[in-house]
Every structure is written in C-alpha cells, then in structure tokens.
Image (cartoon, rainbow, N blue to C red; front, side):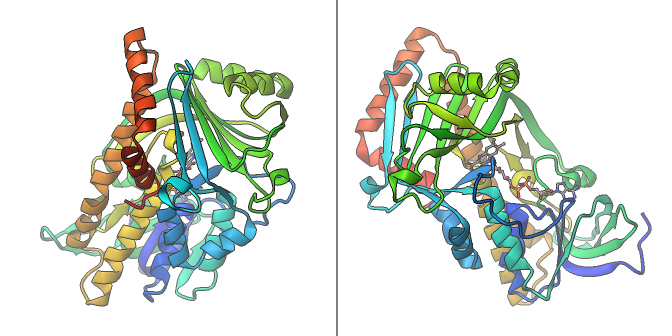
Length: 416
Ligand SMILES: Cc1cc2nc3c(=O)[nH]c(=O)nc-3n(C[C@H](O)[C@H](O)[C@H](O)COP(=O)(O)OP(=O)(O)OC[C@H]3O[C@@H](n4cnc5c(N)ncnc54)[C@H](O)[C@@H]3O)c2cc1C
C-alpha cells in the first residue's frame, strides 16, 4: 500500500462501533484527541421497538453499569429499556445440585441488568454524535493496513496507514481493533490467536411465559449444554404483569441445535419448556430464533506497534456466564485510562510502553475468566456417575457457604 499524501489524519482510529468500540470512543472523546470510528454497518440511533425485544441481549454487571454512567449513557439506556434482575437460580440437570444468588444477601438492589444490545448501541451512538472531534465513518470496509516501523523497544516511526474499500485513506497514531470475534484488523496485522471450537451452538430468541419471572435469571446445566432464561421487562419490571418475557440462550451440540432450529414454534416451545423443567409454566410465544456457533479465542498479545485489540477482537468467551461484553468494556476502560493519562502529561499514547501497560492490566484477568468458563463447561460435560455426584454435592455445599457464595457473586458483578 502506498503512503497517501491525501490520507485523512487522526490520533486514534477505532475499527468497530459495537458496544466496546463505541464505549472506547465515548471514553476518549473528552480528551480532545481527533478520533475516527468506522464500521461496516451503519452507525445510527435506532428506535427501540415497543412490541418486540432484540434477540441479542447482555447481562450488564455493576462494573459495566458504572462505566456507562461515567460515559454519560446509563440514563439514556435506562430511559429506553433495561431489565433489572435481583436473583439468579442455577441448577443441575439431575436435580440434586443447585445454587441461589440473591442481591439482598450482599445488600445490593440488583445483581445486574439485562439490556438489549441495540439499546446500548443506540445510547452510545447518540452520545458519539455530539462530539466535533469524533468522525463517524459508516458503512465502510477496511481493505488494507500498514503498521509503523519499530525504531526502539518503546518507540515507533510513522503512522498506521489504512485503506478503505471505497479508496479513501486514513492515517493514525493509534489503531484500535474493536471489530469483533472475526477481527479483520487482527488478521491484517498478523496477531496470533489461540482458538478452539466449543462444539456448541447457541440458540437465542425471546419467549413469553405463563408465569412471571420475578426478576430472576434461571439457568440449567445439562450434560449436553446449558439453558438460560434472562428476565425482560418493558417498564422496569416492578409489576408482575410486566414479567412474562425472557431472552433465552440455549447452548447445545451442533446436531441438536440444527434439529431445534428446524422445529416449528410450537414444538420448539415444548422442547424448551421440557428443558427448563417447566419452571415458568407454558411457553406461550416464541420469537424468531438465531443460532451461533461458539468458539473460544484469545490473542497471544493484545498490542503491536501502534495497534491495540479490545473486546471480542482480543478474546471471545462462552456466553454461559454472560461475561463477554463486560470483559470488553473493562478493556475499553483500561485502554482509555492509559491513553488519557499519557496524553495529559504529553507522553506518546501510542508507544509500546503505554500499550503494554494496557495489555498487562487486562490479559491476566481475561484469561482467568476464560479458563474458568472452560472449567465450567468441562465440569458439566457428560461425566461418570461418581464425578457427577461430587459436582452436585459441591454445588449444594457452595450454596450453603454464604461468604464464598457472596464473594463469587461480587466477583461476577465486577465489584470485587
Ligand atoms: C449467544 C450469545 C449471548 C451472549 N450473551 C452475553 C451476555 O449476556 N453478557 C455479555 O457480557 N456478553 C454476552 N455475549 C458476548 C457479547 O455479545 C460480545 O462479547 C460482544 O458483542 C462483543 O462486543 P464487541 O464490541 O467487542 O464486538 P461486536 O459486538 O462483534 O462488534 C463489532 C463491531 O465491528 C464491526 N465490524 C466487524 N468487522 C468489521 C470490519 N471489517 N470493518 C469495520 N467494522 C467491522 C461490526 O459491524 C460491529 O459493529 C454473548 C454472545 C453470544 C454469541
């Protein structure tokens, strides 16, 4: 790629205006740096539908809520739609092991909020449109990039050069890849990843249930996968009448996923009702279903000369604990802090010292969470009887050990 003299120049270019990339852009906007955010999809503020829910939702932890508040978007999220949940009940298919987590046990109002991804994006994109120093480019496709040259261990020479498919060129001191699990930036820049197939597909949809969910997330672990019902509300869910919708995430073996996807709504609802052991009565309605293959992926390093990976571009994790985007938001927060601090004292915010500090702050935490999820998945895979007994006894013992259980709860909420 030729260095273009007509390239538009920025301090930071973020590829990907998803929840993580858009959050980073909001976090950096007040620094006055010249920022470009580009996405292959339209960056826009979509209305929230009043009569249906987005099938993609995220369980937002207290830590992510605090981050959104600091970006000035939490009120805009709540004003659109967010569903608080106060309890979580997890049990094992054999029915002998179970754990109940409750916000009251740790003197909190809620354990978290289930929020539609489109609601989070609308609030973030709306916020970004206010800033004169933030340029939004969409829909655009990245076609090539050239990294700067390393001159010393900490320093680089030149800018990162980007070419877009419409023949526009950009150059930037720092390129941030927030372009999701199949990151094109990660591929073009030659980052190594370790990845493996979970041999599971996740089916997601919204259902209406006969019984109210009582602001409780429920999850059943089975040999062949996990099934979660995440409570949704139109109006904050204080009224039981507003507690009959749930977002479901059902992760199963690929063949079973194909057969579930092939069922008509009535038969799918019956299968779902059986799998959740009828806990919410009849499944009255099922919205359109989507299925995703699940892959775990982790980049060996998150930074190179002038380039950093964040969010799913750096790591993708099994959705069973609902931590994926929460980890990505912690990446965005950590990288924004490093960049802002360096910029405030006149240091280069794109040099290796700054970028490695970001990497050190995040890589161990993300890896720890990924190994924990992998351990969970293995623990609940088809196991011989004595192991199952141990697992169920362990779950029940944990349920009775309040200090440890409360610690796990706080850690999952990102507040410890
Ligand atoms: C079934 C399922 C359920 C989940 N549930 C939860 C949950 O409850 N809680 C939770 O925390 N996480 C959950 N996750 C994970 C969560 O959805 C992801 O971690 C999160 O979406 C990652 O955000 P991101 O911004 O990094 O990437 P993405 O959301 O993938 O956004 C990437 C953005 O980059 C853009 N893009 C992609 N390629 C290019 C390109 N070449 N050029 C320009 N733009 C590009 C895309 O259009 C998109 O806007 C779940 C995941 C799945 C599959």
